[in-house]
Length: 91
Image: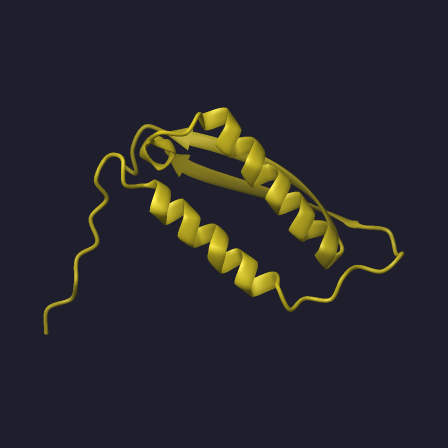
C-alpha cells in the first residue's frame, strides 16, 4: 500500500502554520478558564522554517504566535514564556 507523500513547496508553509494554530485552538477550546490561583511558569520553544512565513513578515508572525500562546496558557493556568527560532530549511 502506497502512503501519501507530503511535500512542502516554498511559499506553501502558511497553510501548515494555520492548521497547527487551528488544531491548538480546538485542543484548548474546551479547557476550563483559569482561577485566581497564581500562574505556573512554563517554557515553550518553537521552531519554524522560513517558508512558513511566505508573504508575512516573520516578526509579525512570531508576535502573533507568542500572543496566541500566552493567551491560551493563561486560560490553562500557565505563564508561558515563548522562544521562537527560525530555520532556513527543515534539514
